[in-house]
Amino acid sequence: MSNTKENSKYKSIGEVAALLNLINKKTGNLSTHTIRFWEKEFKQIKPKIFFGKRRYYDEKDINILKKIKYLLKDKGMTLNGVKKVLNSENSDIDELYNNTIKQKNNIKSKLKKIKNLITVIKEKNG
Image (cartoon, rainbow, N blue to C red):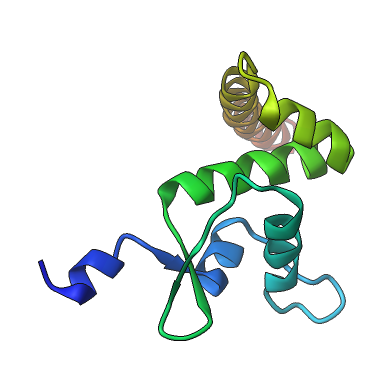
């Protein structure tokens, strides 16, 4: 297997920041420093260092980063709270995370139906 193919399963820090939608609200640029900060805080994140000092993240690291973002940003947990969840053996974070994703998709679907109903009502009453 060539070196390029082997490395293609890894994503750069910029690609991961885009995937996680980590955007600096002031500048509108990707917020890669957030990932570097989380890497220092959470020992579970172990990027590979290729080509000098460039960080590359595999699927496992990306999934951990998604969970960290979810717990910190969506659930409003503290860093210590997230560390406890990630360190606990029998954590139900995967189930919680997956259920939240399903709920978000379900809510989007319901909002779309409501929007369509409003359009129909407006047309009838217009």
